[in-house]
Amino acid sequence: MIVRSKFIQLITLSALVVVATVIAACSSEEEATIEKAEASGKLVSSDWMLENLDNEDVVVVDLRKEEDYAAGHIPGAIQLTPKAVFQQEDENGVAGMLPAAAHIATALSELGIEPSDTVVFYDSNSNLWASRALWAMDVYGHSDSKLIDGSWNYWSANELKTSTDVPEITASNYAFTAAPDLSIIAGWEEVLESVDDPSKIVCDTRSPEEFSGKDVRAAAGGHIPESSNVNWNRSVNEQGEFLPAAELRVIYEGEGIQGDKVVFTLCQTAVRATHSWFVLQELLGYETVKVYDGSWTEWGNRTDVPITTR
Image (cartoon, rainbow, N blue to C red; front, side, top):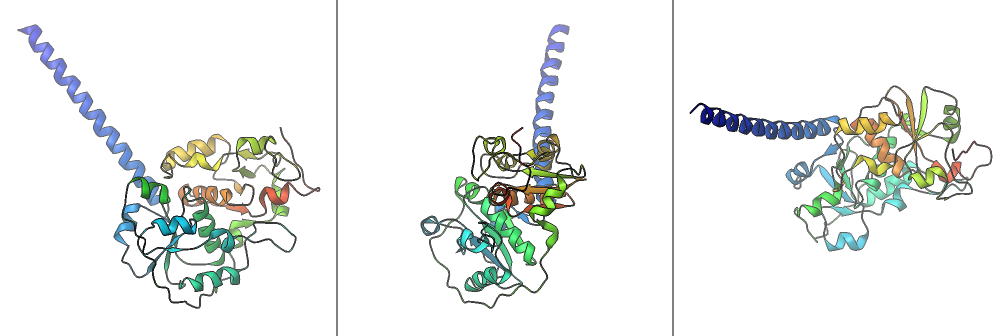
């Protein structure tokens, strides 16, 4: 009887451990989701989007290809081609640069967007182009832009509500009225000054092959001396959702990208760079993060800046 009693106690204890483990795991997942959601008012969940499909003050902008949009999109979404709106060759021949405010305002007017609207961007690549759009809107002072966590990847994978209807658009007269926010954009001269300054660091968001100079996409391959390489796609999971803040901190701080430093993000044409800018500024709360808009297209084609492959 004593042996049987101890056996029953052992089984009971094991069951309690299993239950406690499950509860702890669920609690950790819930806390991670809350931490990520509360990190930035500019990141919304698919549930939030579903609840706001009929909100007249919310404009959803689909940044995928026209044929993908036509095959099915988030109900009420309007389509926009991001590269034509949020990138342009500058007067020095550098491709992919941020266009003038008037150029973007014209496109927003054609979509019927007003300055008071909440504009929600999504794309088919883990918010890659959506982050470029949001960053551009931030530079020029739109008050409320957002991304959907997981973007179209998550939405389609979970078979959420879609539509093939194209909304009727009444053109607006959009205009940016604020001065550009220069605190989130940098030129090559400012980045050059960071090379020998330990209080500043370049976060190179390209692939390891580009960083090392094995994949050359300009006159020269390699990277800026003293920069750190954190491939942009390390910040999302398989469904395109951003990782919890705790995991993101491990990734970026492990590569020396600290919140107490001025961080410059770059890639080839500052699209991947804006994705990492969003992660660092909006999800991790880093104080000073600037997108080097010229990125490697500019730096790798200059002859008066340092480049290394070590």
